[in-house]
Length: 155
Image 1 (cartoon, rainbow, N blue to C red):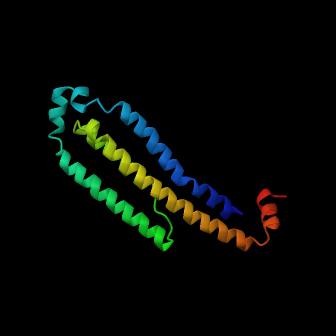
Image 2: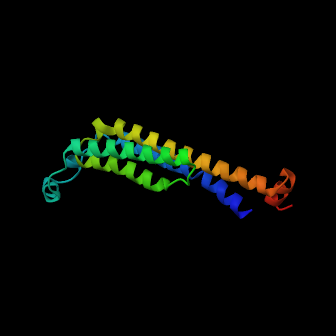
Image 3: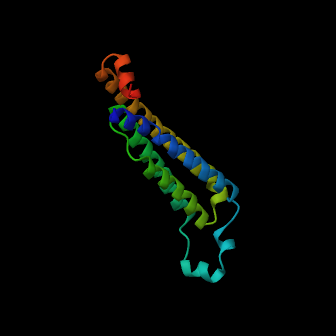
């Protein structure tokens, strides 16, 4: 019974990642025209040092997106347990921060948003299919559906 409850909770883990990403994306969308150089005094900006080139951040975004998609697709194909949604989420959100730091969020918002939605949606699909198979397997172990429902409801 605890396994089934745990599986049902786990099946929603990917949706939470997508929801949080969309919520932060809404905030980033409305703040995309703000820049770090406009938000901090010039002396503090010099203290931070030069910003990395935008092309390097874009290359890292492209490579990390392709790598994430390959890893998640491999896990789906092999039927392996999904990785951490939070790692994918925080890595995608970090790109909003990086583009903000180089004053380029307004021009690269859509790239970060699309890559984040695609990666997190595929991650959720991986979680959903994996837990769905595990729930189905647990239900068949449980015996007839009526006795399983009695165990779940406690009656």
